[in-house]
Structures are given as C-alpha cells and as structure tokens.
Image: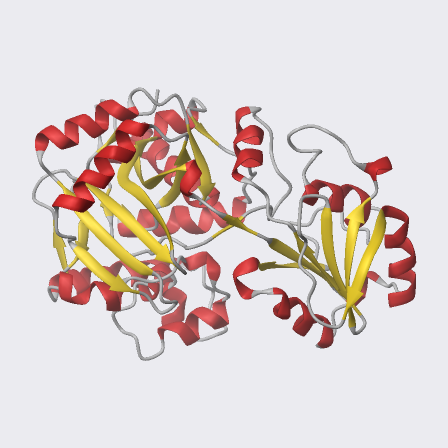
Length: 414
C-alpha cells in the first residue's frame, strides 16, 4: 500500500509566489532557459537551471554551476522571499487550464515504494539526465521539482478535497505566464492530516505520470545517504521524495508528436511511397488535420497535411504493442527511417502537443523532412502498461498543465 507523509515545506512568501514559481527545468533548452530568466531574478529557474548565470560555453555540469544554484536559493531565503513551515503539512494543489481543473495532494512519497514497485513506472531513464538532477539535489540538500504521480481515485479523497476547497481560503492563488490558474490550500490540522495518510494506506499503487528522471534521481540520492548513515532508521527525510498525487480520472494526456530530419536520406516521394505501405490515406488538406481516434496519424510533408490510418495487417495487441506510438516506432521509424533508438537518434525530435500542429508544419517548412501528429495516449493505456510492469516507447505522453517548481521545497535534512 502507498506510503505518504506530510513535510515541513520551504515555500515562498505569499506576495512573491507568482514571481518565483517556474515551469519545470526540463521543458527548456539551455538557450530557452537563459532567455526565460532574463529580467526575472526571483524565478526559480535561476536555481533549477543554474547554468543560466554562466556563459554559453561554460560546462553546465561543473560543480561550481550546481553550487551557484544552492547559493542562489540561500540568498532568496536570507532575503526573506521564502519561509519554512513550522509543522509537517499536506497541501492541495489545483491547476485550471482552459476551463479544466485537476487537484492533487502535495506530499512526500516513500523511496521504498519506488524500490518495491508500489510506485509504478512506464519509462526508462537516461543516466546522464539522472546524474544532472542527482548533482542538483545533492548541492541544494533538497528536492525542488515535484514528481507528478497518479492513483486510481477513491471517493473518500475526492470528497475530502472538495470539503477543504469549500471551507478554507487558499494559501496561494495566482495565474502563471500561460494563464494556468494555480490555487493551493494548506492542510495542517492533525486530524485531517491523519485521515489523508490513512486513505492512501488503502491505495495499492501510485503511478509516475511525469518526472521519471526526477524520481530516479531522488531515489539515488536517498539510497546514497542511507549508506552514509550507519544510524539510518528509515524515517529520515531523505527516504521520501516530493510528489503531487492526482486521481487518474482527472488527468488528460496530450499528443506527443514526432519530427523527422532530412538527414535520414529520403525524398518526400520515397517517404510517401513507403508510408502508404503501412497506412491507408483517408484525406488530405492544406490546413492541419488532427487524428480523430486511436489508430489514426496525421502527417505533414511537402506542403500538405494527410490523415492516415494504420493498416490492420500490422496492428498488434497488448498494452505496449497496441499503442499508436508503438506502431509508428515498429512499422515506420525503425524500418523506414532507420531510427532504432529515438532517445538518442539525431534524426528525430519531439514536440509536445501544447505547441499545436502548426509547430510541426513550421519545422518542416524550416527544413525537416516530415512530421507526425499523434493521437494522444490514454490514461487507461498508461495504467495498463505500468500495471503490467512494461515500458512505453520514449516520449509517449505529454501532460498539461505542468506542475510548477519552486512553490514547494523538501529539505533532506529537516
């Protein structure tokens, strides 16, 4: 059963939360991060991506880079922009984007649950990305980016969340730069804290929706600190990591799209001929065509959009093999474009659905060979893959809205 617990958050003063809160570090390239912090000295991205304070040719993984992030956080704390909670607490975190809301519980999840597969995964991680966050957590002595977890919703928790929202004034209420409304409630009344903990003790599993690298890094740091502490009891803060837990039925996955570079060596005509062996052409248009259901894929190539449908001869069943992203990888990316490992291959890039299909068109017009617009993976598919102990192809899910960083900091020593 899931083990969670409240924690003494280091969090922004109310009047500064809007200026501090920032999108997760990994949604930015190095250049984008540098631009995003310009003129925003309070943005948490200055701490999450400390290389932004260095020259463009500096080694972003050098020890002094991570130390500068730690010093920046200490500076903000010393200057009074942050405060520390006096007693362990939970928080409700509601995000509303384009009229759709989802409400999560901010808590610390147990590393042991991750090790014992009570926290279920659906992606592999890259060692280099893990190492970056390991160094970041170690330098700060804290976790700063919450892991986005899902669970199969229970009515008791939904009812309690609604009661809190109806009867309490939000601790924070603001909108971010993308006009996502953020509302957060403090839960520190002992009886309510105990009730929430007991509800999750009856939940058999939680699922990483977003943040596999952050989770793996937090676990790696915690295990290292265990080894270094001969008096280890299992209850130290480093045995838990910062998370926000949402009922799965409140979440929505957006499409995660693919752009193929011209360096694969095919012409547009050769590409279309090969693709029509694997897909049936449904229609074409000069304006973007969006997949309408599972089994359909949009294609932009040349100056035209095409709506394609997977041919039944090549469709497989199973939690992973039956996914549209698996079909594309198995029947197209590997055999047609020679892209066997999309995590590392330079001939492919990925575009989150939040940027829209016009971004795919733009990249092709700027020199890419073609782009594929995918039908979104469903939460049902994600849960089935994770429950089966299986792994999705890379870049299968794009969640919106994103959890902001810098609102909650979990110290490993408090």
